Every structure is written in C-alpha cells, then in structure tokens.
Length: 563
Image 1 (cartoon, rainbow, N blue to C red):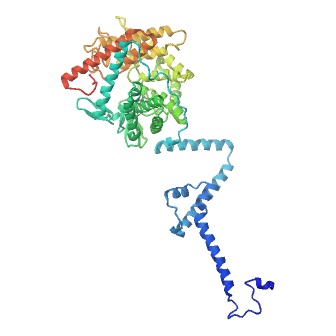
Image 2 (cartoon, one colour):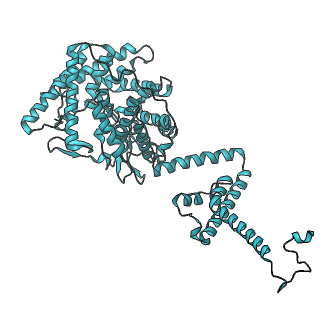
Image 3 (tube, rainbow, N blue to C red):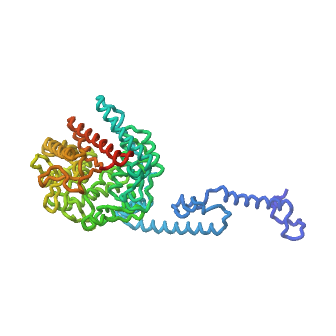
C-alpha cells in the first residue's frame, strides 16, 4: 500500500469527488472521533478537575473573598454562566495584584519594621476577637489536674459531721427554692417568690447558678452541679446590648466559671470564662489603661459611676481583676489579659501615695488620685486581698505583688489600725488625713487576710501579724454578739462612748455578708483553736433563728433572707 493512502487528509490524483473539500466516509468517521475525544476532554476538565478558584487561592495565595463565596455557595457550578466566571477571575486578578504589592512593600522594609507589623497585626486580631466574640474553639490544650482534697473526705468527729450535714441541708433548701421559683434569674426574692436581677448585671442571667457552682461541687451535690452545668452550656449568653459592672461580673461570673473549671475539669467552663473575659477587655480602653467601672457588652463603651469622685475608677473594682485575668491568660494562651492587669500596677507604682496609703479613687483619664479617702472596707477591701493572693497564686514568685502587699499593710497598721479604750483592735477609715473611727462589716475580711499572709511577713513579723489577725477577728465577733439578733451590722463605731456597735440607722442591717465567717475559717485553719469553729456555728444558729422569725412574721419559706 502506498504511503500516501495512509494519510486521510491527503488528496490523491485518483480521488473522484464532487468538490475538492469533501471527505470519504472513513475520513468523516475519524474526524468525528477526534472531535468526540476533544469534547469529552473538555467536559472532564469541567467536572473532574479541582475547582480552579480554590486551586489558585490555595497554591499561590489566600483569596479570602473567593474562599468565602465558595463556602457560602455563591461560587457554584457551570450552570451559573460565564458572568460569574468572569467575576471570579476578576477577583483572583485583584487579589493577586494586591498580594504582589504587599510582597514588594514588605521586601523594602527592614527586619525591625517587619517584626513591628507582625506585632500590630496580632493586636488587631485580638481586638477584633473582642468585638466578634472569643474564638474559644482555638483554645490551646491544657493538661487538667484535679485539685487534691476538694471532695471525698468526712470528719471523724460525729458532732462536726452532724454540723456539716446541717450546713449542706441549708444549701439544699436554698438551692431547691431558687430552682423552683427563680431558675435562670440572678437572684430569688423570698417574699414574693420571684426572680430578680439587679442592674449590676444588665440583662446577663444566671448569677446564682454560676456563683454557686463551686459550692455545689465541694458539697458533693453532683446532680445539682450537673443541672447547673447544663444551664451554663445551653443558656449562658454574653452577646447582648447591656451595661454591666465589670467588677461584679468578673468576680461572680468569670471567677465562678474558673472555679468550676478547676474543680471539675469541664471544658465548657474554661470556654465560657475566656469568652466573657474577652467581652470585658474594652473596659481597659482609657488613656491610662485603668478600666471603667461600667461597660456595654455590645458597643464596648465604658463609663464610671457618676458619684465616684469626679468620674474616678474605684480601687476595689479595678484592683480586683488580677487573679481572674492572670488565669484567663494561662487558660487561653493569650497574654492580653495579663498585660491589662499588670499595667494597672505600673500606673499605681508611678503615683505618690499619701502616707503610703492607696486612696479609693483614681481618675482613668488623668492617672491622678481623686478624693483622698482610704478604706480597707468598702471601695478598697479586695485590692489588698488580691495583692497577697497574686503572690501566693504565683507560687510565691510574684515579688512585686508581695512587696506591694506588705508595704500597704505596714502603712495601714501605722495610719489606720487603732485600739479602743475597751481593748478592741479596729481598722478606721482615713479621709484627707483625718480618721473616722468606723469599721464596716466588709473590713472584717482583713483578719483572715492578715493571717493568710503572716507566714511570709518580712523581718520576723509572722507572730505579730497572727496576733493582729486574732485581735481583729475578736472585734468582728464582738460586733455580732452586741446586737439583739447576734448578727453583725453593716458598720459599727468606736466613738461617743460606744464600741463595736452600730449607732446610725443606715448601718443597722445585715445582708448576709460573708466576711466575718470567712475570717473565722482562716483562723481555724491556721490555729485550730476550736473557738473559731464555735463562733461560726453560733452564726449559723442565729441565721436559722432569724429565718424562723421571718417565717412567723412574713411567711418567708424559700430562703435565708437579709435582715
């Protein structure tokens, strides 16, 4: 066979055809096969090769706009027509050009400038997280270690065992009625048997549930704990247009969630704590970094209490964030929380302190003290407690916290602590250099605080500080025994011939404050003197007696009310 006959498109001299451009049947068949193969190849490319937009954006650069459209389905199949294809290609070109420009700009910068840009980008991401909610699904792995001794122990003494059972019974009574009448609300009003929420929490709900989590766990009320956990997981929501107290939300909600996490190891508590912590970060957006007292969780706009010395921040409020925020950094891997509270120390360290004391008011704009009012009770109290506990929490490595605490205590002892003619040691308040011989119920926490810090006291002052703690505890006990109901007043005075007695009508009430009982607990733990346990038990009995009185007078059968 001639070679020419193997070439189907070669026109031979012997071909007889109607026109020079026509093909024989075999040639047509071969041509059809070629076209069929080409069409098959095209359809295969459309339906079986990886999506070109994803391929380009994944290999060469990240095209966020295209990727977003792919996830949401706006970039679909070929049925959408060429219009969308052209739109996608235009986006790819635009992103590609932008990436090239950014790369050129980066190459022209020095190493130090590049590092600074990276740091700035990280800070912007952190701030964006505040407004959009915490990305808690990216929390780092934390090896959970259950704290020893939290549960599983029974006292050998049958009398102590019976008293312990009675305390648990009181907790069960209060919890059951809260769950029956006010479940999900912040508080129970025992007279009306209705839920109540104060404006301190805005529209944030569940303060009693979150605040009680650690108590439920320690008392081994596990069914109740699981019910509370389920409520937290399903209902605890921070995405709301509401103004809250940063201080109250931190100690009740953030502190409650952190305690529940450390006791149980349940991740829901860590996740919720970090999420709420990020919601609170905008409170620190002040010229000094001293946080606002009040914060709108949605807008991030903050302000201070209008009555607080010309719009000042309050020592006990901005000074009672340190423990929780240090833990938030540890559990989230995000240093921003720790940086915020460490900055508060920097501001305080730069300021002159009158007589070594910390006034209760500090202006967050100017960074200067407001009214020179010093109190270890209301407006100041937990600032000092947090200094000591920050040092202890750090395994005694936070030397700055230690020094701040012991220096403050020395100034308090020199300028505020006095002894009455009847031999009662008390802590007065300081107003512009003049003492007011009044001690609040809130101040009674100081007995336990001083005992807790006595072991680390400088210059062999451990014994002296334990004696001081015992004297303050005795004074607070006297404030209870000198009332008709044997429950302590809101404040008591040492002037006009009276000692440890409330003399003003607006001080003669009891609102279930825990500070005196807290100090009894610390003193029992450190001394094992049985009188502290006995004093605590007496307070329990008087609580029960007051409840019985209220049942008779007002038919209050749902909880332990304030008197």
